[in-house]
Length: 120
Image (cartoon, helix red, strand yellow):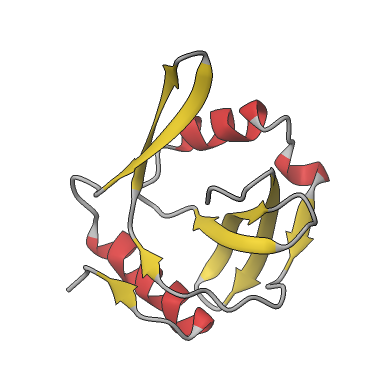
């Protein structure tokens, strides 16, 4: 995630229904990570992240998956704060995740052909 210079909003319609995520791109447009919206996500914070990145989801959507092979998948919770004048996102283990959120996360990792770390 440290290489991220821009974010791209992406969406796809799957057999489970609509799916939405952010693609983390470096300064050359190379994809390095995906952040998926799950049912447990704070939707207002998600929208605020889109606004902070100066994006509007409907106008910058990518449809479907682009060629990318992630190394791992983890459930994380982000917290925004200011640190020495910088805007910082801190990642932490989520406090709780619903059964639906866990099932969708597992389906996403199956679609990506990777193992979800730390989830039973």
